[in-house]
Image (tube, rainbow, N blue to C red; front, side):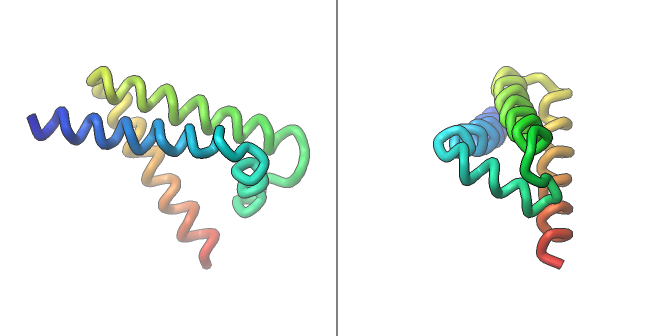
Length: 88
């Protein structure tokens, strides 16, 4: 039961993050400049890739795919490290 709740919470967080980016595409794409993505095609590619990754992992986690859970944990750890780096 607890595992199912944790899966749904993680899938919801990932799916919600992707949907939030899709609901405000210009500002969420522009926010990637904080992490070194200058204006141009690479920023757009990174934005699309990020959304696809989050949605893919959300579906995988919701379906109970163990590799997706590890991938989601790694992605969130990377996000945390990037935030710390950007703040410093």
